[in-house]
Amino acid sequence: MQNDLINKLLNNERRAVARSISIVESSNSASTELLKKIFPNIGNAYRIGITGPPGSGKSTITNQITKYYRKQNKKVGIIAVDPTSPFTGGALLGDRVRMSEIGQDEGVFIRSMATRGNIGGLSKRAVDAADVLDAAGFNLIIFETVGVGQSELDIAEAADTTVVVLVPESGDAVQAMKAGLMEIADLFVMNKSDRPGSQQAVTSLQTILMMRDHDEKSWMINIIKTIAVQNKGIDEIANEIERHKEYLTSNNLLLKKREQRTKNRIKNLVEDKIREELWSESGEISLNSSLEKVVLGKLSPYHIAEKIIEEFKLKQG
Image (cartoon, rainbow, N blue to C red):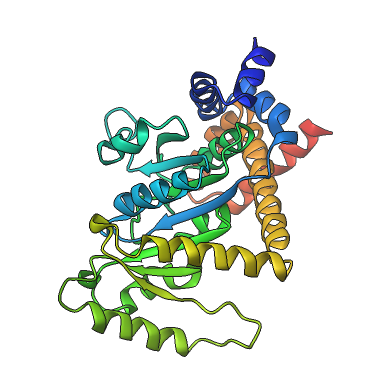
């Protein structure tokens, strides 16, 4: 059954793509097997992250830039990461009503995913879903994150180019730096730039960027002013993404970036597997049986932790 599904996936059949993403979201053995089998077919898609504070117009920019790429006959996969519903654990915004227009395009595939409490806003399974889209032959994959204002390092790891979207109302650009967005941006977009305070916000951001250490080989981050609802500045965003891609490629940084991403991903997978095995039934029993001693002050939590690890090692040996 899975081989048939994979063949359909590699032929870019939409139902197979949707079914495959559902499988990888389940995080079970079928998910692992599918990801192993499609691995030889991934690595061709360029991955773009679009993040920023809520209300900055990330969905509109994603919508417009997708239309731009479709005019170039490029297939675009979109992973829209939404807040987790407290009731269902699903994505609150569904498949983004605002993207309904491009959602009808056969060359576009949109999938909403819940953050599942992931601090950076990007679901762990979003990267697996991107692999599915990559294997299905999409040229570009866009991660659009919730932009919760906390560290968005996970999107920087998942994407080749990270676009940070701000608006004049975000306050001065220092806010972006506080949110950790300054460190991950390859490109800043000042959206809704027809609003008051736009130029002051750009100038403030430029001042901060100039203060950063750089040499002649460093990537120079640009700030692009857009009015996304009017499709203004979208071409410039696409051109800047392409410029960044060329910079990474010509300096052999794209491969290094992907190697680092793969290293981090493998570490996370190993940690997840160990955690899963460690807290199996025996690990949980060992922990519960020791809790009273810790509460009564007879044993330190460090003693219990070391004991559980030793028991785990013995079990493996």
